[in-house]
Length: 92
Image (cartoon, rainbow, N blue to C red; front, top):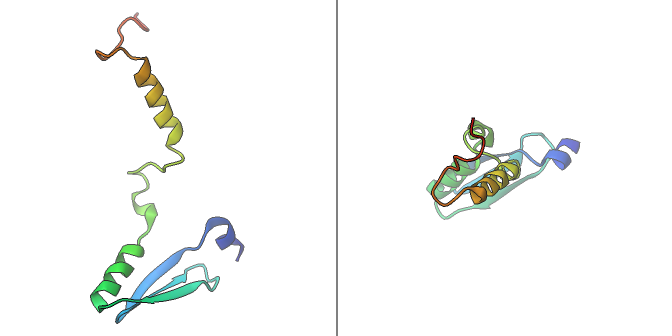
């Protein structure tokens, strides 16, 4: 499926007994399974992996998109004197 090739798979995770199953929600046919020692472990991993990253997107900055802001702050803090704010710049 073209969407999965461009955007990546959108896996959904479930557990039945000691086996955790996953499959692509976009219907491309990608799927798999893994067996754990206990049903609790399978359920725990399925719950952790089956979360949407979109839920907290506003609270954390994506790594690549945040790089220009981090570079700006690093350069800005390098230009400041050790004591804090530089009051001689932009005085009105």
